[in-house]
Amino acid sequence: MLQDLSRLTALPRRWAAALRERRFAELAPVATLFLVAAALFGFFQIADEVLEGESHAFDEAILRTLRNPADLADPIGPAWLEVVVRDITALGSITVLTLVTAIVVGYLVMDRKRAAALFVLVSVAGGALLTSLTKLAIARPRPDLVAHLVQVDSYSFPSGHATASAVTFLTLGTLLARVQTGWRLKAYVIGVALALTITIGASRVYLGVHWPTDVLAGWCLGAAWAMLCWQIGLWLQSRGKIETPPDQPPR
Image 1: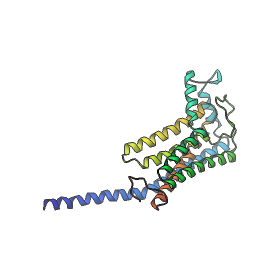
Image 2: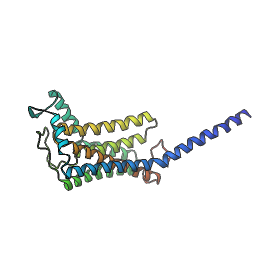
Image 3: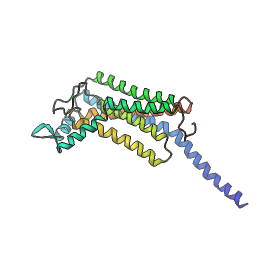
Image 4: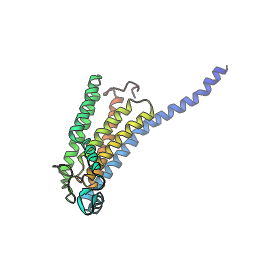
């Protein structure tokens, strides 16, 4: 009888837990779409400021702060810092991001997750195409206030490194987080993806090849694209179009 009573008292707790999971499942897409809308709003606000020339004072002040006032070709900090920043900025290059994406796609194919591999490839390639088209549409020249410490040959807005790193690392980060069971591991993976994205974008300003608003806009655009792709991926998973991670039941 006591055993039956304990089972009865456990039912409300189970129902409450199930209700919380259901509410989270229902609210998560809404919250994600809200974040996508907020990121896109930020991007268009920055783009409007740039097109109207109202961001120049802010951009110039930041670039000057990062350079020796007596010699704008000399970045602040010790000589080794410039070397470190050059190495960091290379993590957001087309070569490195393509290599990382290819490794992940190859792994998913070998793990018989071909639909997931195709989705990752389309997400990253779509983000790269979106960045290129936006650059051509805005056609903002590179900063001419300070010397460029690395070679560049494309338009400035938005930062390709900032956008592409956000698209690639956040997309791959959310993919890896999906297969982790503990929240600490999930937080670690997402935290690393965010740290890489922020550090790479900041390196572009330090090296003088982007205005700060280029990087801010790149973060907004890249994050919006990554979150949108993540939500689409969950939707496709729930309909069996993309393989479900082994530790997660179909939704």
